[in-house]
Image 1: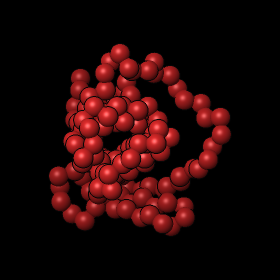
Image 2 (image 1 turned 90 degrees about the horizontal axis):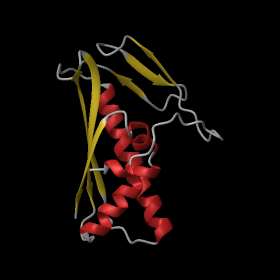
Image 3 (image 1 turned 135 degrees about the horizontal axis):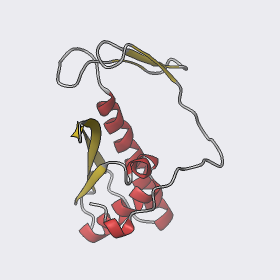
Image 4 (image 1 turned 135 degrees about the vertical axis):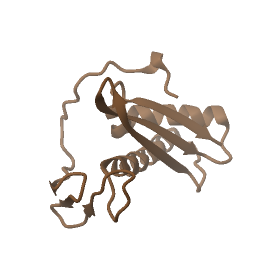
Length: 151
């Protein structure tokens, strides 16, 4: 879990340079909606969480994006620090949709698997990845986040 004393002040991020812009067009919302990217590389259909059907939901998309970005952040930090990373590095993300004070909110958990690494070194790497991962930075101070390191 990230430590409160390491939390950054939550301020809006103002990009100095845009390196990529994702664009998606969505119709229909959570129940029967569709979202397509402008380049045609992604098209997803939506269904309500827990309702079955052939669609996904925004929470699953967030979990997939966050875990991918976090894994890439671990590799970036490890590369800069010249830390050897196991080939079977993995990140599992869980994103909860729930209610707080009558409004919908999110909570998230990351399970970082670094087989064979020293636990303290693995935790330091995960903590550093939180500082550079755009998804983690976006979530910081806005949703409850827990990180577990498995070695």
